[in-house]
Length: 223
Picture 1 (cartoon, rainbow, N blue to C red):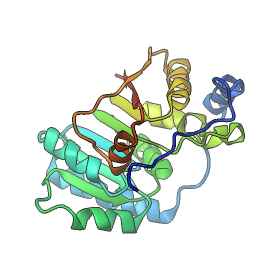
Picture 2 (tube, rainbow, N blue to C red; picture 1 turned 90 degrees about the vertical axis):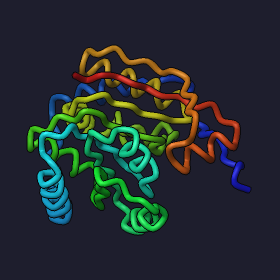
Picture 3 (cartoon, rainbow, N blue to C red; picture 1 turned 90 degrees about the horizontal axis):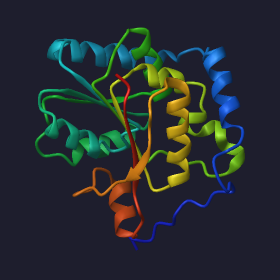
Picture 4 (cartoon, rainbow, N blue to C red; picture 1 turned 45 degrees about the vertical axis):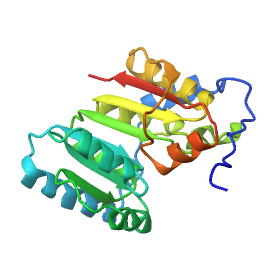
């Protein structure tokens, strides 16, 4: 029953024709939605923990980390970095913490909305070493373009955090749009390529591999 995931089915036949105009509008207007108080508090607390660990330590952000499985993998793979995994679900984060016998000392899981967390990082002039977006919701319906990360008004702020940005998906159309958006907003070349992980980083990646899906990624160095 586990290997029964379906591929996303899009109502689009190609890249959304409205994407370039939407990107230009977001680049001009910015994103002015007020930041929620609980996100400010979560950011302040997590930043204090990072500062105590060594604020000059290179920072890796694992956005929408779910149960934090990928965050643990990253913390172990990059022991000289500090890893922050952010997810809006307290229950997912708690479930992930219970499943790890030996917690990496360079890892912090934070309950917050990444839209606000990204903006708070940007306001603090933070530059990331690496940034991961692993299997975001592809929102395949054409009408949902604005819900995809590259169609969201916060996307310019996400890019401004810099670092080596990696987005993975089982939806090549999503990543084709993502690459176009990165190039249009930054001038940096970005391409969708096959992703063949030796071992899965997230529960979604494990399920998609077991279901026989082709996996894809976009990697771009924003620095």
